[in-house]
Length: 81
Image 1: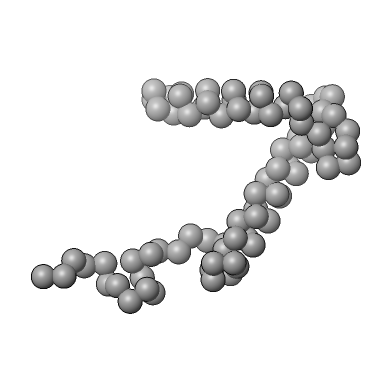
Image 2: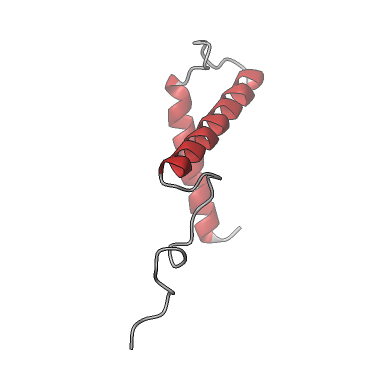
């Protein structure tokens, strides 16, 4: 692992550790074991995907993927001469 990847991994794990201190599943239960942790991760992934989809729909990109701003806005990506 490179230094930047290590820093990113450490930062991510620290954030997860802090989040898990107060984390609750959608049904209101606290995370008590590995199965609960797995369920919590699935719920968070689903929430992120749902938010990305609706955010994409809100801004006119219905499939939720990022839009290349150099295309479709009347600009061809080249600087004027």
